[in-house]
Picture 1 (cartoon, one colour):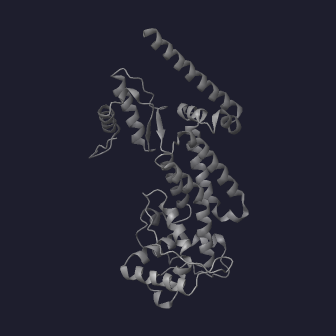
Picture 2 (cartoon, one colour; picture 1 turned 120 degrees about the vertical axis):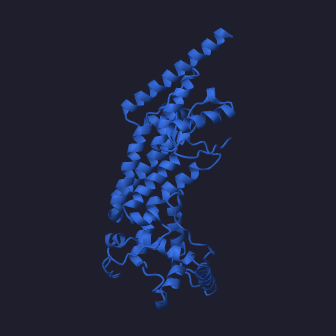
Picture 3 (cartoon, one colour; picture 1 turned 45 degrees about the horizontal axis):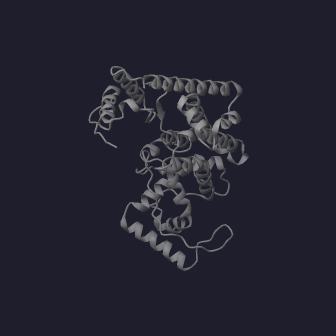
Amino acid sequence: MLFLPMPGRHFGQDLAKGLLFITDRVNITDKIMFVTTDDASNMAAMMQDFKHLLMARFIDFDSANQQIICFPHRLHVTVMAMLRECTSTEALENPTGEFDLTEHDPVNPSSQTPTQALQHDPVTITCNIANTIRSSQLHREEFKEIVTTGNRREHWLDAQQVSYQLAHLTLIRDSPTRWGLSYLMIEQALYLRQAIEVYILPPVMSTIFKQQLTKNEWAVVKDIKNILELAHALQAIMCTKHTPILACILPAFDSLLSTWTRMRKEPSNVHLRRMIDAAVEKMTSQYNERRFSKWHIISIVLHPSLRFRWIERNWPANQVSYAKRTILLEVSFTLSALQRNLTIA
């Protein structure tokens, strides 16, 4: 539609004026159902100021109910909260930097527990390895040759000890502002694990790759990837251009919460419970904020695959009653508006 540069500080009042300028330009100011924003505090301020600007034109606007928080952005915030529980905060904020983790106690790979492996910060080590291989053309070319040679000699074996061909992929550099990139960085490193180990294990590489991953640390990286997998999949679906997602937001919240709650109870994930707890806490607070939004409820009821039966199956009785009242009030309001328009006509 239209992009508007916003130089300087992004105060709510300035953002509201910019939004009004855009809606006026495309002639939709009196037709707005809701505005999608991220979860920043200045967005809430913008909606309040936008409401006052519309009131001056005698246009009704509910700044609370007509603000929709971007679900993929909330997922990203949740994933970052999860990663803060299992990796270096400094590394998370600046993943392109190199971080020395030698202050950790020496590792005995044969007796290392999953908890000890997690404490050794395998995500940051994975990030360091990816950054180092990407850091120069020579490293990239040598790594590519490792993959090519391994493919030719059928060196790469799957879990069933069957050889397969590795694709020539570049390791991904993480970024805290790129949604889903932490998951993709981990996924790519796990896929290229055998080639990475062949490349960095020779003693001559020890001065370049100061930290390496043990077998148990690789396993923990895979565990973290499994925890993040559903969030990444939902984020990818909901960022698709042609996917109508408003009705899917609350079911997505519900799916994530039930999945992470189940995973938390699994004995194999004991070492990741703090990470999962951070996700559940963050998602629960966000879910409770949004579940009573009028537009979320209406969109679910109108969705042919969800309808009101989804609310009846997933919400307690008092919240089902609230949803019914919300729908009936909206239907009553719409019918009254139609009757007024017919009378005027």
